[in-house]
Length: 250
Length: 250
DNA sequence: CGGGAACTTGATCTCGGTCAATATTGGTGG
DNA sequence: CCACCAATATTGACCGAGATCAAGTTCCCG
Image 1: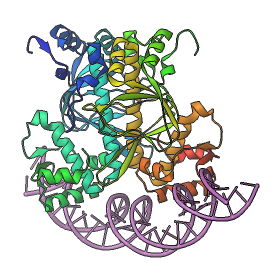
Image 2 (image 1 turned 30 degrees about the horizontal axis):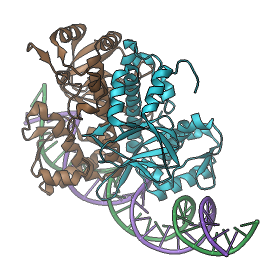
Image 3 (image 1 turned 135 degrees about the vertical axis):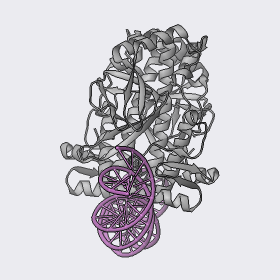
Image 4 (image 1 turned 180 degrees about the horizontal axis):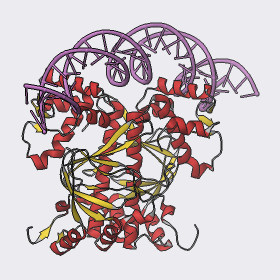
């Protein structure tokens, strides 16, 4: 690990999502607080010492909704889908969390609000809940980073309300592809084609569609020569402008 | 105004939304920080002195998305709808904000992310953005309350993703009614019938439906004797259990 | 290779969208 | 206070995007 001071981004807590880019720090209350200073190695070491590295295989659950919150997880490898399931089995994937993201909050009465399923092999640093909260309490720059992360998740969630509420099936799929490419960009450096790590069924549950409709939308985008399908899980973007136009939302 | 110490709820920043109820303070990082102490009158006075009371007529906009953020507004009267509009005119209402709510954040590069329209006469205390941020910086209990508010908005937004993505039209309308009744409960003390202050078109844009479908769902719920329609904007719940069952989501 | 899971494609159905009349209703002025 | 009118809501008829049902096909992984 590098010596010296480490920015909040090292925690992935203020990781930029989507094309919107990071909100200016000016908008973060902690900024005017003067508390958005970078974490120092000592704190970093302390926090890391608190948590144990854990590992999950593809399709394993990190936790399920309504389970008591024992730990929070900072993902260090892989992709996780957070979802809600209705009594009759309908499922909505409400968030995609990848390297740098902190999973397991907000909670609801001390229980996980969502289920979190590993879409790939996943590794994460686990923090025992009460000790993590206490640590956040003692290090206000972390509290600030957490608040900023929550705010970005809110922006993302409202964007997805618009996608699901207003866009047609092909538009939603186009939006999903752009989101994934941006989300994976940091780890992937923009290489093409890109493995999505989502089955058609999972994409469908994220976009409020059926897997058949998702499949047809992929085929349509392929026929329009906007994307290329490589194998069953990988996609290359052939015409980014067209794709962005189809996706409609920022 | 009462003397003595005033809880965060006096700010409406941690106002309980929906049936889920308030998250336990234990889950708020600020709690373990020991910064969730109530505001004192002096601070309250200071903050209020900073802001001017403003007024909007029904259908006026408090602000529009992409306008530079000049002020944040704490609503003291009325109901506001926050929305996003696509280039082709499709609109998604992404949030309903009423007395106690703070409007105008998060922003996006110093510009409002949503438009905010008054659904009724609205009064709000306006806080100049930079001064508000500075004040939040000096009073960490307020920063904590803000973070908690953001977290609750996130919970609400993910719930709405599920409603829009998974529920059928009548289920969505049932969910909307329950949400409104809970949202207005504090001001209304549960009186029946309740004025929604939403046109069918606005409900449609909130639920990702058309106004005709919303109207048909109302009629269907009326025919099932689950609700009664009073005038054009008021509703009484005749069978709360049925309505909750139909709504499916928490 | 072989088998099973995931994907694609086709046929058909259905819910909600669209288009088009009415019907209410609440606000306004006589 | 009532009559009128514009705005909003309701209802009906029809249409179509996406869901459902049902084969096939591809692809991965052992």
